[in-house]
Length: 101
Image (cartoon, rainbow, N blue to C red; front, side, top):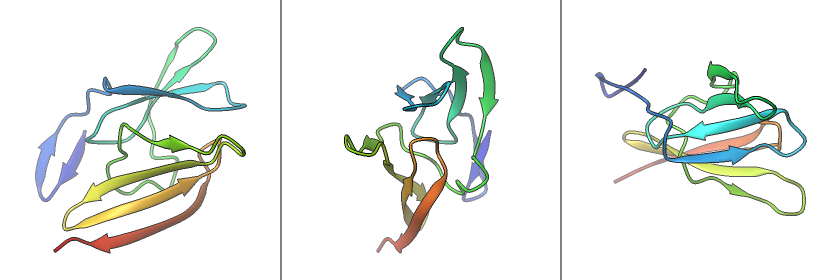
């Protein structure tokens, strides 16, 4: 469950799945919250994770660099939008925040 501007909402993690390269994990994604971790081998649920650095919603439509596996994504944290880059195993490379007008 995440909070946004003081309002509580649930994360269904049912919009898309991201297969992490060279990792035993799959991420079930929803537009409104943290990734939900599943194990590739048996689809065992591991639960939600912010990987220690995701501080806003994590979009369900990340882009993966085909050469190195880096993950690019955005997240809303109104009135800001966060632009994130992570390694193929979800370690933070960089993050920037832009204020929306």
